[in-house]
Image (cartoon, rainbow, N blue to C red; front, side):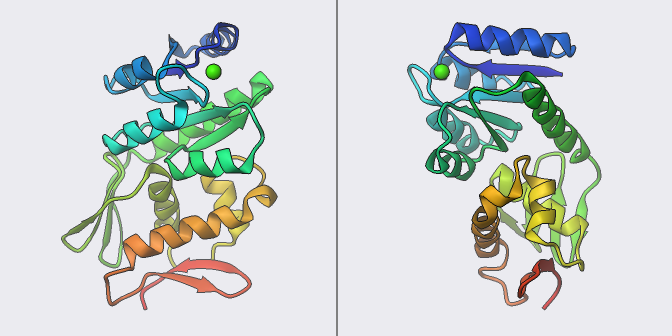
Length: 223
Ligand code: CA
């Protein structure tokens, strides 16, 4: 597994690099945002650890450019401040997970493992529900013949719902499976993402698939 670290602080970058190498990952460090975008686009990495504060291009810009260019790699963002605004902006821009500095190395390892495991699980056969079709290799989604463009996070949320179609999923279930951090902090993020998904998946279609179960959570079902 090859990991790209985009971080200009040399001490932090080498701390992460050494730790991940000890776990047998093949690690490359990039020291600015522009170089990070270039390397990330090469197609040789399995995961990116991306710092927010970077020279040339900041982390959010890098993230938006990569997602905008169709990059579907799992991206773990590092933020210096524990600010909800940064966290929400990062998630909106398509980060799969966020970690606030300073962090314990064990926590970084756990999140890297979880992200790689999840993206690995996704590489199976097509999954379907009603007229929805998900391609886990390329993270593409269609309803009937119409392709629906989703961010990485929206895709992972929809894939989780499709795998559990017909079951009521609480926000805690969704948080546990699609996010890595404690659920209490991010209650409304789940609702925000469900709304994004609804607009894209159900918006123009007569048959609605994503439904709210009052007081309990959400369910994927026909009609
Ligand atoms: Ca930095």
